[in-house]
Amino acid sequence: MTSAAIPTAAAAATAPASTSAQCDWPAYRTFVEHFVQADGRVIDYSTPTQQTTSEGQSYGMFFALVANDRATFDRLLDWTRTNLAGNQFDAQNLRLPAWQWGRKPDGSFGVLDPNSASDSDLWIAYDLLQAGRLWRDTDYTKLGEALAAQIVSKEVTSLPGLGPMLLPGPQGFQAGGVTRLNPSYLPLPVLRALAKAQPGGPWNKLADAAYQLVKTTSPQGFVPDWAAWRAGQFVVDPKNGDTGSYDAIRVYLWAGMTASADPLAKPWLAALGGMRNQVAQVGFPPEKVAATTGSVSGEGPLSYWGALAPYFKALGDERGLGLARTHLAALDNPVAGHEPVYYDRVLGLFGTGFIDGRYRFDDAGRLVPSWRNACD
Image (cartoon, rainbow, N blue to C red; front, side, top):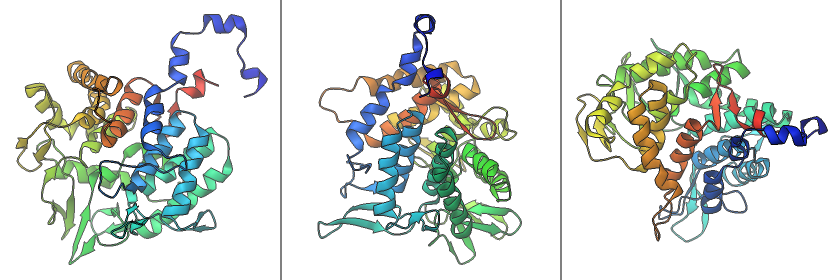
């Protein structure tokens, strides 16, 4: 902090009372205390393998950036480098990180699946690029650029008649003329920020293709977890069918967080209207939907409300947003004896952080955290 950034006593006296609340993020501190080891490993305790995923690491890095917690950001990055990328994670020598790490059948810990997950890779690249910009450190920027280049090389394919599309990972998603796709792997702000950082890359065309994926596979306004491309068109995923549930809920989240000035923001939200209508009718989101017919079942868990809060805010749906806030209050007041659930906490941080103004994305996808103005 420079001396010019230190407020005078008079300025401090007239500062808004919300400033300290913006700079301190209790929900983030709770997340770190419960789910981040001292060495920077994010753990999902609900899994038998006590797994760590590259997704968890990438989200943790994002939250650390929003919280202006560089020490935790670096711990998360170092653990990812060492354990998921085999120490091959610098700008000159970079390999995509393994997506899953945890307890093996023999009781030892290590990589469980060496394939990478492209959504996590995108988020880590995004986190690094934004960290380089916000913390003014070109080492992060160079690493983010190197990772983005590896994503283009290993995880982006060209689909005839569509253009560039993100594979869910380098291995196992293209066979027999079918390419399997995951709509939740394509957050529009992240794609826009990568386009800003690498103007010569495929990112804006990828954003257009991602919108076509969501629009085409959501005829009832509900998006599926998985879809596929075959013979020049989007089709129901041959492995998982048209179910929309725990993966797909993030599509509504990413759409809700997109800057309204983005040319795809309104049409993307419009393609997802089924969820808004369903919550308006029954007062809660369904746990599962059939994307092709619109039939629904179950009641979505707390994590769904975290994902839907920005979606309702973007739609101007005050009732839906109010319901989300009411449910998400449980994150701040857990029932005694009930440990916080990993996915509830993660999507809850995304959702509450956004609607409470702790961060937003500009129309180029760049992160605008509240501390940039209020907490310097």
